[in-house]
Image 1 (cartoon, helix red, strand yellow):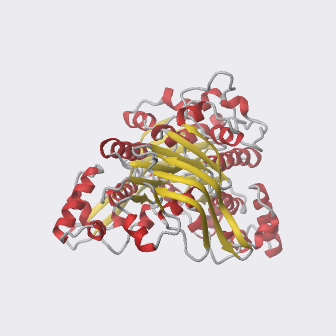
Image 2 (cartoon, helix red, strand yellow):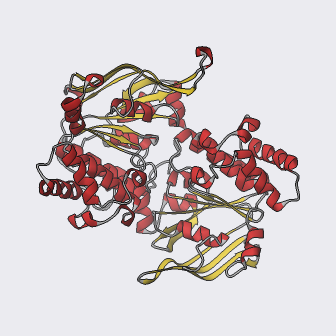
Amino acid sequence: MPLLDIEQLEVDFTGPRGAEPAVRGVSLSLDAGEIVALVGESGSGKSVTAAAINGLLPRGVTRVRGRIAFDGQPLVGLPEAQLERLRGTGVATIFQNPLSALDPTLRIGDQLAVTARLRHPLSRAQALARATEALADVGIDDPARTLRAWPHQLSGGMRQRVMIALATLNHPRLLIADEPTTALDAVLQKEILGLLKRLNREHGVAILIITHDFGVVAELSQRVAVMRAGQIVEQGRTADVLAAPKHAYTRSLIDAVPEIGLRARDPSPSRRLGVAGARRAAPAPKPDAAPVLLEARGVCRTFVTARSWLPSRTRRFDAVSDAGFEVRRGEIFGLIGASGSGKSTLARVIAQLLPASEGTVRFDGADLAKLDGAALKAFRRRFQFVFQDSASSLNARRTLLDQLTDPALRLSVAHDRAHARELAQEALERVGLEARHLSRYPHAFSGGQRQRIGIARALVVKPEFIVLDEPTSALDVSIQAQVLNLLLELRESLGLTYLFIGHSLPVIEFLCDRVAVMERGRIIETLDAANLRANARHPSTLRLLDAVLPVRAAAPAGRAPLTELLS
């Protein structure tokens, strides 16, 4: 008998237009000690299916039909009190965003202790002892310090480990991991996946992992089910599905994944990832001989973390130390490194969003630290920034029209509101959206569409240089491919120059011309991106490359290489 058995599951949400189906006829099983991946694009129904297992769907607006059984016990329609007893000991969930899932008002030790005491008659000291063991089990070297910490004081990888400790604290038999490695760098991702595999191997915990990353699927799972529009369109052994997918949708998802070495096979400026609608454009001029547009020399940024009237007790943190590089006109320059290496801080210093503690940044020959008034305004027109979190960087209370016309008016690119609207419409159409979308608010768009809006907002002032800070880290593979292709097309059609910050090395290699590698605030290596594995020399760069999860070892016989699938 399967540990988890789902038969013909259907989930509808009640909205203004009546019942809207989210899951339609899903059947899936998972044996004790097995690892199964549920993969698909955003909105395909993966997380809704997982939430239905635990009874975490909102009541009153959700209708669930079909059968879900855990260890033979039917779960659909089970009273909340019985579901609550099941959660944590039978089925536990690792949520996607640990920062929002952890309570910011409680220290880590208090959150773990409360969870332990919910299921067992423990004293506070006993609960903290169990919490210490749980943190040690997930590879945290100093559990005592972590117990005293607040969630915001931990790195992304540490928070994810705490989430896993929280989920496994009461020894569940089934662990639902909802996108547990999204937005983590390759090294942290591999560490977290190794931890999940160890929990499975040593404690026999069955894992249902929800992801859009086929590298995660290949690394962790034994079986995989592919969802599209609320239905499972293909499932089978992971090795078989990845080597020879039967459904066209599965093939399209796998073909949209950039892999290390792809750039070596297709180094042309007109390269595109193989997704529907991708097209080749005229080759862009090689930036090798182009003039330098941006130059950073000896850039440092220091933060004061604790002040004291005694200078010796004032604590400082060097986020960026002696960083230097140059970007040529028309180039796509990549910046990579582990989480906390200083990439985003350096980008904000370059964009004049943070002042440099030391060093100089020159744009088209001008020292940016000396700009003010009209000169600074002119720089803002030429230099734009696209932020990582498209949802929080857009104002939820304002329409796209307001958010796209304001920069054009404020930076004097538009003569009046009518002209600003024309520029907004042109920018929106360039990123594949329509003029009718200008009257909508950000919540009406998907994650991929919001990222396109962020790019459109940068384009509306007709810049020359754009900083892109992790613009695809939280997007599923097909949307990521569309955004990457869009960036290449805009570079060619508008003559743009990019500084692209990322943690996905296959994405960096595919998109960029040159790459700088950061570690602990310093640039340790700058190299040609055409073949990262061949060009890398520094041990830290090689460690990042070794952590990349391959989707497949090689294309199976009878299948064309990915570059031949480009349309």
